[in-house]
Each structure stands twice: as structure tokens, then as C-alpha cells.
Length: 290
Image (cartoon, rainbow, N blue to C red; front, side):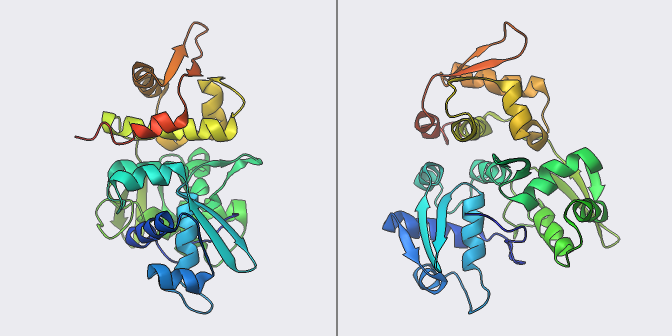
């Protein structure tokens, strides 16, 4: 599936709709149908020319939960191993650890275009713009950055506002309000935004580990040992997490203690050796929740 830049079509991610879709796919194993079939099966509203079915599928694909293909108007939908793991304990997508890995997955790079993301709009907001407008900025600056990169499009401001406001921790009606990604201040009809650092609480470490292993499988599948610096450079994960090397070292040490990896720092640059398969890491996804 290839995501268009404006795949949300003005629709914020609605977690109950996505959760309902995941549950239905899980029951069917493989769900096939056109948008009206899927709407009837799941209750996701749709119309003749627009609706929430395809944006919801796109959100699920972008967040690493759905494998989605469309041919001649017919969708074929399957769950990823990550989605199956999350559904076992968090069927309604309420846990902050579930939401944080969804956020990470929405910012994966496109392996065919290393300067782009699979979800290009989120990648621009969360990663690419960091170089140009730093960690504190307003909506005007973000919009101008994207215009300079993508050209003029009427939908850009609404889309940028939709993405940023999806992380407003003061609004319980937005999907990512439980996770600290942006601090958002509403002032003089303008959004003031500050990038936050990813949580260092241990309960998130299994999710971070799962992301590392999933991306390792996708981008470095032939390598059992990789340079962690190379991984960060390729994935831009350091920009997304807003972490220093010291913070990443805490994560790597925790992963080594769990038996997921072996870390070799003899050369100064951490080399990490995979000791288990990704499914073993996924088994621990909720293990640090109290």
C-alpha cells in the first residue's frame, strides 16, 4: 500500500474505529471487500465519494498494525504480528505503550527513498522539520517548511493542524493525548509547539525494543549484527525519540539484560547482536506494565 500525502482526508484517527477494524480482521483472519462491505462489517461510516473506511485502513497500515492491498476496488486486509500482540491485552488501543509504538511506526522511513517516510506527512512533521525549525515552533513555521518542501496545496494547513493536534495532551478526544510527543499551547489563534523527549520509563522499553527489532527485520534483514549508530542514521530514530546517546544506552543495556541483544562497545560505537527472534520480543510487549 502506498499512502498519499493527505491520506487522512480531514479525518483524525479514531481509535474505536481502528480497534473495531482490527478485531474484525482478527476474526476473519483475512478480510476482503470494497469500502461498503467493510463499512457494513465494521460500522465505520462511508459514502459514495468519501468516508472514514479508507482513512482508517491507512492509519492502521501506517501504524504497523495492518497489511493492506487494494485491487480493482477490493481491499485485502491482514493483521501484522504487532497488531496480534496488542490485541491480546489492549483490544481498544487504550494503553500508552500501544499508542507510542503506533506513533513510532507512523514515522518509519521509506527504504526506497531514504529522505522520505512511508507516511510522508507524519515524517515531515515529526522528523524532517526538526532540522529546519528545531524543537520549538509554531504552526505557521511548520506550514511554511512543508510548503517549501512540497509546494502549495490548499489542504496543507488543515493537515498540519490535524497531525499536531492529534497529540494534544489536554484534549481527551484526540488519539495520542496519552503520550508525550508535543507540548501544545494555544495562544492568539496560533499553535505553539515544543517537541518532547520520549519517556524513559521502563514500561515503554518493550515497545521500543519491538520497534527496533521490527525495523531491523525490515531494513537490515540479512544482518544478525549491526552498528547502532548506523541504525540511528538510517532510521532517524534519534530525531523521533529526541534522545541522546546516554538515553539510548540505557535502552540497549535493558535489552541486553533481557537477553534480546548482546552489546559490544569495544570500538566505541555500539555493535548490537540479535540473540532472539522478533516474536520473542513481542511476547514481552506488556511485561513492564504494573
